[in-house]
Length: 346
Ligand code: AOF
Ligand code: ZN
Image 1 (cartoon, helix red, strand yellow):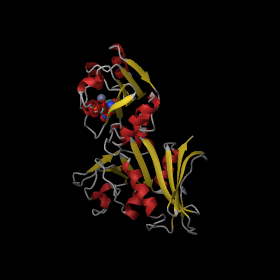
Image 2 (cartoon, protein in one colour):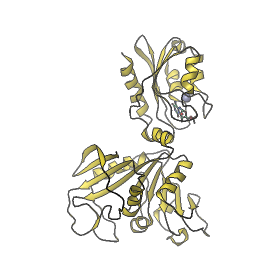
Image 3 (cartoon, protein in one colour):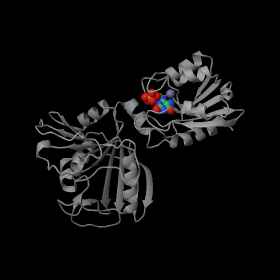
Image 4 (cartoon, helix red, strand yellow):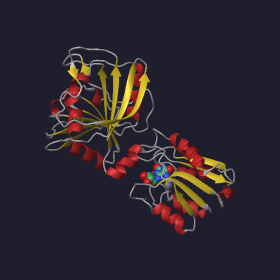
């Protein structure tokens, strides 16, 4: 089997870790002798052994590592983190050649792993093929901020609400399932105060299990004036209230109140970056989404459209006051009676 094909096997193995590695990348590795895969491994969960170590553990006989090739989706690490450096281990067990899918943008590694291997006389090739595995992880270390996705549901006539202050269901169960999958990939989900009060959303991931639920983030004027029985205070997931006023209240352990003079899309994103959160989903409403768009801080739009005409109602982006922007269409998909469009910024 050739090396691009072996890399695809390692990438498929990496995908098994999806949803469990939290802020760590998903990583897969295969050990190859005479063109044949003799062991496959992946990073199973945050804090657990790295893919390279998992692959070594899958070898039927540990001496098979000697003189073998390892094909791994991400550059082997060079640092002592939650586990010792993989590069040191690969050298110690006698791996002769390492094929790397992509270099690690995390500054704790960033080329050092590759250099350690090469300095030990190991033959190293970098394929520059991410396999679309760690979009948010790569983005975070390249741009120093979370990847921002705006999600919305609209009718055929571009409405997000039938009338002012009520929660309206627009799309069907398949779109709902999909939006749950989208939530499961996030480290934070943001809403504005109007959505918080009108919808009283749970902002949790249902329908599938996640080891680290996304932080629920709400922009609010004054945390002390919120009704105490909101779903956000149910302890189901960490919750951050971003506000301009100091709080005098005692909050449950799951709630943090973060005070700043003025929360803007830029300061929100900066704060999440400081906390190491790599993926932010902006769920609503129109004011918050429009502000993120106007600040040019939206990397991806996910739009669910229902074939329904509402007539009077609140148009999506009615609050948008920025310049006209053009998006790249990246995916169109049927979801039961509805459809989903994914767009990327140009
Ligand atoms: C992983 N799994 O298979 C590889 C990783 O906190 P640690 O010690 O688990 O280290 C996390 C970093 O290790 C991660 O950001 C990446 O730079 C590197 N490689 N991490 O979780 C793996 N190969
Ligand atoms: Zn490692």
